[in-house]
Each structure stands twice: as C-alpha cells, then as structure tokens.
Length: 193
Image (cartoon, rainbow, N blue to C red):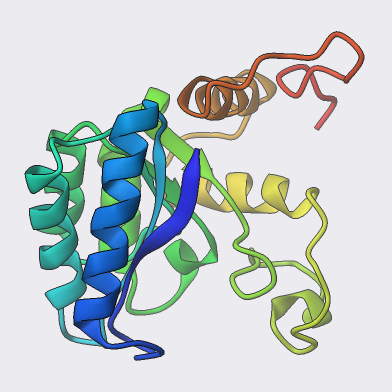
C-alpha cells in the first residue's frame, strides 16, 4: 500500500494546494503500481472542505483502491466513500462526543470493507491506560489495543465482538493490502484474542 497520504485542513502544516499536488502524485503512483492508498482526511471542526476535495480527487484519479484511515466526517461523505468502493477504518474517534456520524458510517460499512485501528498514539480506545490516551505522546500503543477498538466499534454498531469477526477483520486487512501469510509467522486471523 501507499501512504498514509491525504488532506489535513485542520492543522494547516502545509498549504492546501501543496497537499493537493502531493495527493495527486500519490494517487497516480498507486494507479501505476496497482496498490491501494491509505488516506488521511481532516477538516477543521464544523467544516468539510478536505472531505469534498478528497472525494473529487479520487473521482478524477479513476477511483484507485483505497482505505480511509481513522474515518471522521459527515455521513454523506462516508456514504460517498462507500459508493466509490473504499474500505473504511475506524479508530478511537468513533467513541468521541461529536463523532456520531462516524458511528453511523461504521454501522453501514460492509463487513468486508470495515477495518479497526488505534491510530497510535493519539486515538486509543476507551479503557486504554491513561498514558496511551495521549498523556505521554511519545509512548506507542501496543497492538493489543486494537482488540479494545474492535470491541468498542462492535458495541457502537450493535454487533457483538467475536473471534470470527476479528478473524474476518484481519482477513479484510490482509486482502486490501495484498498481504500474503508467511508460513514462519503466526497467522493473524487465528489469534486467541
């Protein structure tokens, strides 16, 4: 996969036009290499310019396979992303006040395109140790926090977490990213958690 790439109009670390130029380059490279793109997209609170620009750029790039990482945005943005065939990953944002749209999109995302993450170290799931919830930003969240995110997402979308569902999410991740299982490494779809 290529990325993480995308648009961040919230923090303003670089001018919007520079972000768009870089996004276009990454989307063209993804198409040329036939690789999915991991996309970041944030607008300032109450705005949606980054989401609208991202959808337009995906259309203009020929809709390459992509994953919206740490989804956040209005419901119609999520619905349009699903119409474009994107996979969507949900992080600790789904559980925050004001992110009700994220939970709505999580409920409507087909299971084969729904992924879960922590977005370490910033968006840990409820119940994670305090230092992993952004108090000590240098600390990395362990992979076990994905289980907490999975349980929280499952509760928010009224689907009970289960071993089979976690295996399904692992398979979805591997399929999207074209990961082939190395016989010398434990099977991520067959974990005890």
